Length: 618
Picture (cartoon, rainbow, N blue to C red):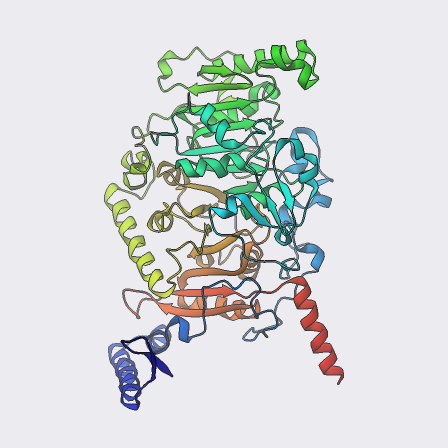
């Protein structure tokens, strides 16, 4: 072993130093055993974990958080699994999206885009294999370069370069795709389009922080809002525009596969400061205004709705759109009527852009038409797989006051907390929760020194609580998808949005609405304890592996007995792991398991299997 001297040269470690290190390890072992008196198996494990981390550390244990693009881990063998390790999926399944399978989708009705919604496989249909990366897969470029360039090998689909060529969505340039920032309604670039919106929407003062972009394409709006301190949640269906959401996530822009169809959006009321549609093909004037009512539900009082494209300013554009004047006129008339009914004030109409603002003073709103009812105020956060309704969501009287501008919003007490709207949380317990996660993240960075660098852009927290982890690691160079499980005792996603963060509801017994390899880091606090009696641990781990990038990192926080089981399965999934004690004491049953997914691709795995077959024949 070598150590670095003061002058920078490397010298051999002295025998005396090695003896001292061994004696210190033995001392801590004896001290732990003495302190253990009366404790059980968990404390014996705690001592073992203490010895491992004190005497070796992450690097010595062989756990590297670096990326190597095409590192030499493809042929590594797996061990430690109680049964057979999960096999690799077929190479054709490199972009497998279990709940958005194209063949299954075609079995469902097309009305209201039902066939483009989530339709997950039954337990018997579920694939239990490791989704491979495509041949030649490389680590995405770091942000902000990733905004403009995506490696071709990571999403090898050229159709959009042809279909949207005149709109400047994406261009193929050899080994990479280049994204000029164009869109259907902004072929000259999202920046100029945002400048136009900024003349009426106050992006600069921090009052508009969270944006919902419906039918986002490759999410260029969200990509360029990021530099203005605005966080967009973008979604689009998996349809004929192959890989649009995949491109968005490869670029480092928050997005998920979704559609405004027949079920409610996976967000609580009053989540967003702005909602946006740029030629998103959603029939806003149809279904009795149901889609506008759903946008109203998730739009905060004082929030903006931007509609760009038909039928706005139809008189000047009907020939270009090749639409009949009377159809466009009727469509815009109905949109204006629904907006008035929802108490949205029209701010402006410029070129092909219409902007409305949801009033904060409900006293100024017109009376609700007799034919329209108010939505049931009971359980407003219960939206998972719930059908959309033609009703108006009443403004909450327990909103708890106005939000501060961002970034002050991140550290302020959220209105839902100060008003007592979240049972079990007081202002004092919320502040303690913030401090707890600051301590946890500080401990994480001692093990994973890359956590506060540009190494991780797309981050997911699988059980986000009130967003403590995301707030503690907040950086303009990364973003966190804060998932509030439907199995969670408390519905806290509204608090997360009031902090200026983003997130989504999800049930971890099912696959997430994203493509494979879309997250650099996954954090999971107590997820396996939460789902212990609800679904198989192995299925959750396989889903984590599907959405994690090669050489991506996982941080699991849970009870020691659960993590030991997880560790056993994880090693069979080609993850390298290391367990660490709770930062407060080795005798706390809660431990932390760090893991790094090995690099392997469909072609390298096939080559490895052929080599094994050849050697066995010899």
